[in-house]
Amino acid sequence: MVAEIIYGKDLANGLRSDMKEEVYDLRQSGIVPKLTVVLIGEDPASKSYVKGKQKAADYVGVDSDLIELPSETTEKALLELIEKLNQDDTVNGILVQLPLPKHIDEQKIIEAITPSKDVDGFHPISVGRMLTGKETFLPCTPLGIITMLKSKNISLEGKHAVVIGRSNLVGKPVGQLLLNENATVTYCHSRTKNMDELVKIADILIVAVGKESFIHGDQIKKGAVVIDVGVNRNEHGKLVGDVDFESAKNKASYITPVPGGVGPMTITMLMHNTIQSAKLADARR
Ligand code: NAP
Image 1 (cartoon, rainbow, N blue to C red):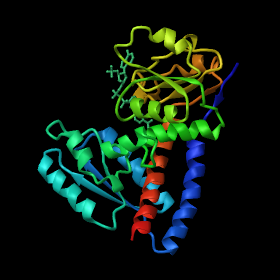
Image 2 (image 1 turned 90 degrees about the vertical axis):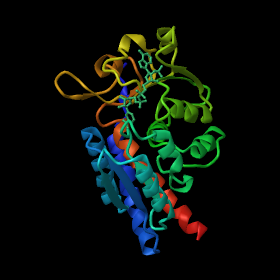
Image 3 (image 1 turned 30 degrees about the horizontal axis):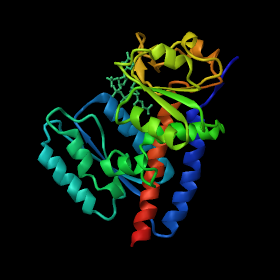
Image 4 (image 1 turned 30 degrees about the vertical axis):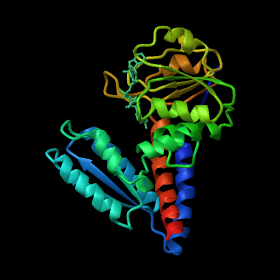
């Protein structure tokens, strides 16, 4: 069996082109979606992610503002900035690029963003709404993964989904979204004792660990759907995921590549959330 590759990049391009038309129409009716990104410090990976987000915003026609601040920025100054952005009616989405410098309490910052502009979907109110199956901004990477699965009509109901990784950003919410789609979900993490047994019986395997070649084809069930969230640099400086793609693709029914899989979908979902936020803000006026 050779897996069908789910090219997130192609799906993302299609979605972005639909969004571009939608934003054009919104602008005609006076609705101008705007995303403000706050970047603290000089981390090259964060800079590159922010650049990708701005490029996507430019393409779809979402106004984007980048506020770059030095790494010495105090927590108080950042909280004041967020409050200003919360009050600014022209801003629909506020994104503070993570990780933040050690002296700033990340959770405090996440909780300072008003839920109506929480396009990352990290605020406890957004998370709680997701947990109870209510409409809310869903976190971008998990939403991108569900969108990819749905694009291939992969049925989730009653399937055994195994999620490796339990971060608040990826693992936990993607498991929750799969549960909301009626999958049976198992989480694995660094303390899991029988991970191999669980991986072997996964119909859907989500790998969000951050370790190159963490999963090999011989570990997975024949016909499994494999979603590789990991982003790692290998010894040659090449971008690779957490799954050994070559061995896994001969065993899986569907698989996502790295690069060109989950990554582009994440940014696209950020645009989706920002556009939704602009529409909701307009409806509240
Ligand atoms: P993270 O916060 O470091 O979480 C990693 C998770 O992996 C933790 O839950 C950890 O378990 C688990 N883990 C580590 N070693 C393990 C082991 N030996 N066995 C089982 N589980 C293990 O990372 P993250 O933010 O979730 O990101 C995961 C990966 O996805 C990274 O490579 C990141 O760059 C990538 N990512 C990609 C996108 C995208 O858009 N493509 C977006 C976000 C993240 P414990 O909780 O027990 O420590």
